[in-house]
Length: 348
Image 1: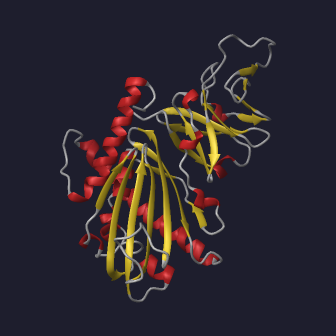
Image 2: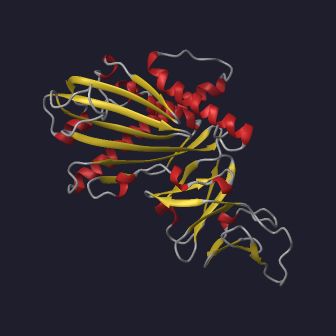
């Protein structure tokens, strides 16, 4: 089961350029997206109500999408409004539509009760449009794993020292404990790595040649919207006991929105923002390449993990201290799904 009354990333904004419809399975539902003549993004059921050909194999004509089989045309609300060869549209010639909102370089879809769609619940990733921050949207990653494994991975960054040694990881991480905080609809993991060398990507980013104080702060909200606050500064210039971060050093945000395709496959949408070397085009590309390398390393781990689970789905696993944040996030999501099943809203 999936949480429905929430926003999921459905596409990057740029995926709808060019005028062609885009088909994608989201939460086991076939969805087609396109832009109307004024640029508004639309999401409909990817199935013609006549003989069920996917509309993503059709054509966008003005504000409508036309089926590529017999030419039926559907408006942005999913209503068939034209049938070639006859003047009358058959009764019941409609397909589903979903709210779709464009924000922060992503298209967000609400697949639950349309009347409950609340745009204020879209993640506030304001950094993506702020001139004081650089922004790289990632390429779409299609991962053959359950989407909750992606959130687990983000809330347990102890794996960086083993999986990402060339970019974000080093051996110092596991020497420092994590702090887990639970709030209404959010889990926060905090780890400070004090007086240790910076990892390779951070060494390049800030020119650090000595010891640094480094922070990893991860906030995750159902159904899996997760921000990784990361950065570092020279040792002694900040205090881990104080606010979440300090002013000196470098600051990076990794923005993550895994969206279920099926029970065992996920579309991974992500981006990252940073507040240093903003006029350096070469560094912008290096950031893109470094994060992509990191995320592709995660993909290999997650897919191998899912394959192992599928081979023996009844076999349990043990939990470690570092699993506390991901376990808390799983419980929050399970509770929200349970509330939707009980009262249809996901709210107590």
